[in-house]
Length: 244
Ligand SMILES: [Zn+2]
Ligand SMILES: [Zn+2]
Image (cartoon, rainbow, N blue to C red; front, side, top):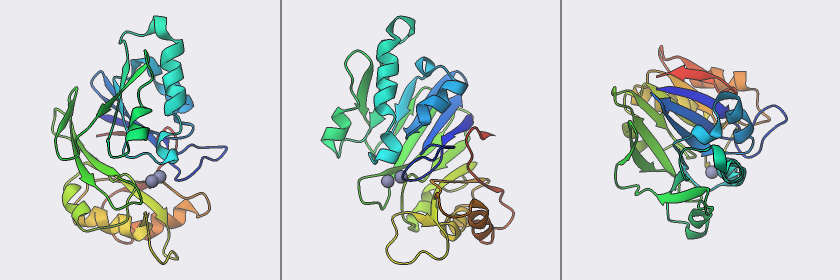
């Protein structure tokens, strides 16, 4: 499968890049993973949004769902051109109002995922891990039909069970929002925690995402790299892609 970074900031976009969103392609199946601010316009550079087979959301913070509304309008206004009647958007149901907003009549259909169960989407098999974050949030482990594994931590503070969930991932995407100077209660990981998680999990490659606007990303890369032995780590950039 192939992962393309569509947006990678936490919180809010900058003039140069948007917030969280990834395009995951497996064969001819196209899944949008989170849909943050600025994600739709970047997606349009890589894939006609009408060719998406589904979207899936880790949680309902704005930096992960800001472009859901315009994606719905895209599907509504380009009605004549689409092959599928509606785009399925998968989300959890622990926040009923936000879940209900995933349905836009005639354009998109909200579908629930059960975090305790396995979700099969095309050639992809997805399992979930509840994270530690101010609102219900689910990390995802996505396995394709060749057995390749992508793990996305979603938004979370560090906790040891994440390493089991991310075990032997071919690519691990981590929520990396702080450097070593951050103290107090955390709702995201520091760069060092991302590196530690990758090392504990035995992840083959690591992508640092959910990056901050006001910390040098090279500094984050350095702090994460200090925690690992021989695992390639990169900071996310728009358009960066990975063959998994
Ligand atoms: Zn976020
Ligand atoms: Zn969040």
